[in-house]
Image (tube, rainbow, N blue to C red; front, side):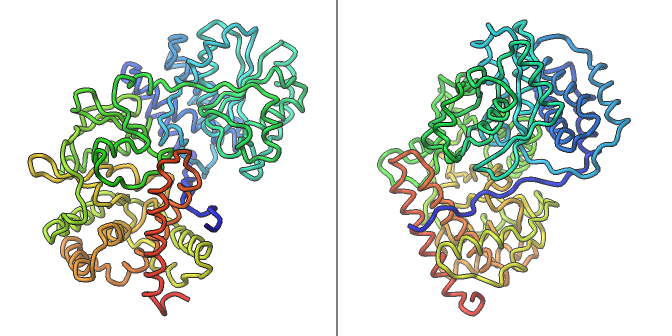
Length: 548
């Protein structure tokens, strides 16, 4: 195989107006309705995002923003009954100072996709409660919120604590942290008071370099490496980290892995994450579709098999997903929602049969065309993809085949951006015991950290064509049925989207093949990769003069 450094993740950074973020935070504060736990959590996440923005922009109001984040962290942890008026005063202070007009923000992945709950970090502090004092350093972005909760956890235990956040820079595999003069002075003050230094972030990722850069900046400022603890969410194998000289550097510091409170909460449920859903859907006598286990969302089947609990996201991230789910449920496309907590949504579990290629019929093609038209109408999105689909297609194709499929840039720009489904494989449709057909896994993939992101609904139509292996007459029928329901003719666009869809899939499974640690999954991933690679090359040749 050629190199596996292909593009499958998309950049979810977005431009937002600073005053708009401040308004969202104010709105969350105004609607705290008795300080319910879920509302406090949502306000905490908004406060952490806003603090991160002001810190990145060196705003004079950043200390007030930090006080707001810490106030909500204290509320969540039950440290003190902080008056909302106190938080409101900090918001007022911020509003009286210049707020950056336009800012870049990225959704914190752990809160959006990976079932990370801030309280996971709070619980991990219990084993460190004997410290004389603690200096917490959060690594922005998500470390902003996590560090505030860690600080609150130490306050809850009566341990003196102080907190700052830092932003690593440079290459993702070789980060650097440059402490400002005020931060260096803070480190010196904490060192002289005998504090233990606790570096907090999600991860480590592939390189571990954000943790390493932060810890080494502390060492450069005079802190003994033995007095530095790194706290994150994953087991760290120093030999597998790809930062320069990672193993030797990592072993200088102590590592503390937090445990998942959500996993503990669902310990009596059947964990169907990491591809285990196939055991419930197909059993052991049927070939399973490929899965990238490490990238799947957390999900559990209740002991009575009535509900499937799935992590849809915390705060505003989960709210957006659940809104789409409510719309699709009311239209009859997905099973009902039965409530949510801590980002986990309960969906009614539908016993039944996953569809296969053999279930394809003209009536079902009409159903899928209607579904695509419905999504285009109900889930429009103002996000501009700025040619990123074309960039993904051309880079991945050239890496894989040494050719450049030119001419797709204009076509792949969405005429009407939509939160697409992104999962149109046959097994994503379930025939229930009563004859009804439901779309499953319909709410998250169109706006997660993988491609395509919000784009033309042609992506889902292309998905149907590729995944159901439609012959020409069925393909024509699908596009005609969609045209009748939406008024949109996809004839001139569908080939480019079909090629982009197929190339993304081959890249996804190739990256999964190199990235998974589950050996039993690799033959399925290899088979999927081979299929999409073969399909991509055949389509490229078919397009002929359209590609050079």
